[in-house]
Image 1 (cartoon, rainbow, N blue to C red):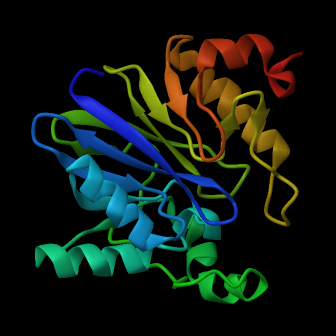
Image 2 (spheres, one colour):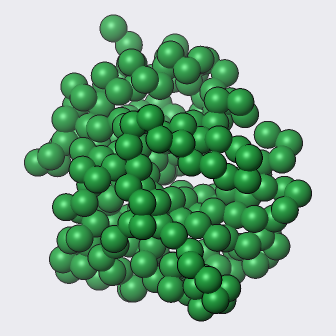
Length: 219
């Protein structure tokens, strides 16, 4: 990806991979899944010399969305203009409006409920400075999880849908293991073995490696 760069900032006790994605020529950036530690995310953007102007959410869990409202406010105070929050699919609305209630169990600082400026759905596209990311609805971990795919760059951001050697948890009341496996095998793997991806926790991988060796995708 010669013009598209990414940096991962693990945040919160969950060590969630908050990702700053930017266009190298313009230094314009987005922040994907700011789960918390807003000041750390801002400091990372400053160190990179990039200017975040949007926030993207892959799904509604607290470790991915808990800092989104605070980051939006901080960035808007800096820029004086709107910083929209986009995603996930509307089917995760119930999680985003209950972030503060969820946080009673975790006690993380700065968690606020989130209302996205734009919900993302299957077939949508997110344009980042000429880089087109197609939106795939991939439920199972949460009902509204989305994956963002730049087919030209052969790159994806998958949230907690797929990991190196594993898949997202489905042991929530709203989890659906069969739906998650179907989303991975029917939507992600057909994209091609050469698609590399960043995920919500741990190191990234590529679809070919996971197709061949991920134990959850065998048989």
